[in-house]
Structures are given as structure tokens and as C-alpha cells.
Image (tube, rainbow, N blue to C red):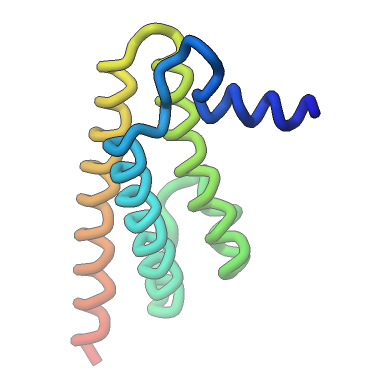
Amino acid sequence: MKYFLALLLLAGVARGQERFFTREMRLETGVLIGQAAFDGYTTQEMFKKGLHEEDPLARPLVTRGIGGQVAASSLGVLSVLGTSYLLRRGGHPKTARWVMRLTIGLEGANCVRQGFLVWERKNDR
């Protein structure tokens, strides 16, 4: 029962609270998950080509293969969602929205960079 109540609180459906997962937040979360999946794919492709992970926090996980890559991507997405949730609960909804938007923008730029690196390596054959 206590897990069910905790889940209700985390989902933002407790009485008297604004919902956390609005339509906008669901869309942003979906985009972020898609970007994290593409980032994971390109990271593993870069390892096959002899490149390395530049992020020292993610490096111990992503060098462990697909399982580590999924763990690193999940931790990244969940940390952004957790930060946004805590900011919204703390009375800073605009900052919470900008955390998501800024992360999506930066992750998108990283996906473009890594996609270019993988594409460039494939064409160097």
C-alpha cells in the first residue's frame, strides 16, 4: 500500500496538486527518451570504431556493453525527470520546464555530433 501511495505522489495525481505529466511533459519525455536511445546506439557504434566515451561519469557504465548503456541512458533520463519534478514541487514550474527544454536541446546537439562522427567513420572505409 505504501508503494502505491508513493507512486501516486510521484505521478502528481495526489489531491490538490497540478499533474506533473501533462501532455507537454509526456511529449518532452518521449523526445528525451528517443534522443537517449539514439545516443546509446551511436555511443556503441563509436566504440566499435575505436572511439571512446568522453563523459567520465558515464564511461564506467557504457563500456560494459548494451546493459551498461541502457543503465547509463536510464540514469540520465531519470535524473532530468527527477530534477524537473523536484523543481515543480518546489514551486518553480518555469524552471522545471526550462530544465527539460535545455536538456532536450543539448542532447539533440550531442546526437547530431555523434551521428556525424559515426557517419563519417562509416564513409572512411
